[in-house]
Length: 409
Ligand SMILES: Cc1cc2nc3c(=O)[nH]c(=O)nc-3n(C[C@H](O)[C@H](O)[C@H](O)COP(=O)(O)OP(=O)(O)OC[C@H]3O[C@@H](n4cnc5c(N)ncnc54)[C@H](O)[C@@H]3O)c2cc1C
Image (tube, rainbow, N blue to C red; front, side, top):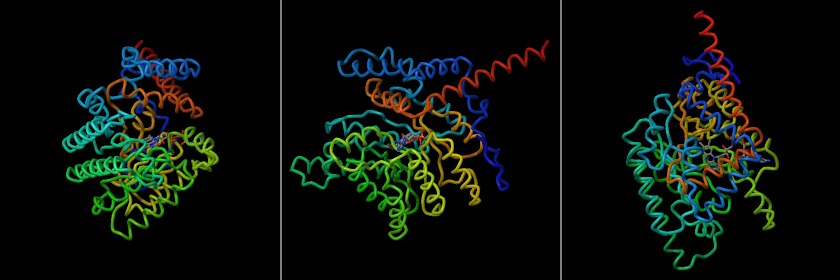
């Protein structure tokens, strides 16, 4: 997919089929390694067996680190600690791609663990202040509060005394993190989660936006465009931001947890919050991009997507509005280990690009890794596309070697 030529741009034109740019950061050995991993994941039956084994290992506490760390973990995660992840941060940075260190420890339900997560996120913010290769930070709110509490808060039911204490702790924790982001001038992306806990997240994020986003977007909300109510929500938030004088930071994604959302709605007998078709989600996603560009004086966005059409559509909207590729209010973002052919080509054409770089103890990152595997086998063709891009680059390199040999003889 190639970008139509634009007159007012000093940057090279964008193509998602420029394989040499897309994979320049990988040596032949690294490319071969990625090839084997993606080839394995491209085999749905094998992937399902490995997912089942990993889930059993997780449940029974079996030692699976030895199998996971040198394989899928190496492809999708930066390391087990911030320090271990710095190599990946530097490698992305050399290619003008920012890293969003994502502390991927999930499913916590104890105050002591929430405290550890808070400390870790503040450390990331402090590090980001010193390291230009880390432009922003991010947080999953369920890492600092229990799902049960977030669900109860979202349902507006009365809290008992214990829950009130937990809610107060959670508020303070989140406020301290946002304050640290503000003090260090490092924006923070707040991830979107399941619809039944999202209202509580929306409320606290909006409060923090109103407090910290007076001059620029420090606190970013995330909207999942697979929800049919999110475009309206976004419009209202922009209107409120303009009215009350705070900038809107928005990460725009399509949304994970599709099956989980539909299943719960069916089981509990309420209308699903999810769009009826993939096309409706795609249209809503692109409409959210259009709304963002119309309001680019007031909003700052991160387009978190691996979808080529939407990413290309955003570049076209920018060109139509006469915005430079590196407009400071617009970031393109992908997950580490995925869609490098988009990230590296976007960066080479001067766009602001970042990649979520998950890290954490191998066992703790397993739910994230399993989600990647499941999500990719659920999305028609996605992993096939990753794999075919690598195959193309391997072909290109081997042809280049033959070309060199020919000219040398
Ligand atoms: C940088 C980044 C940050 C992210 N942060 C979050 C986050 O905070 N919260 C979160 O939930 N997800 C997050 N995601 C994941 C994201 O929501 C998507 O699951 C993932 O990126 C796949 O969507 P896509 O736009 O890349 O590509 P595509 O492959 O074009 O779209 C797949 C998506 O389309 C939607 N979809 C598929 N089938 C249907 C259907 N039948 N009906 C309706 N919709 C359908 C689903 O959302 C599915 O995930 C993030 C992704 C990235 C790259």
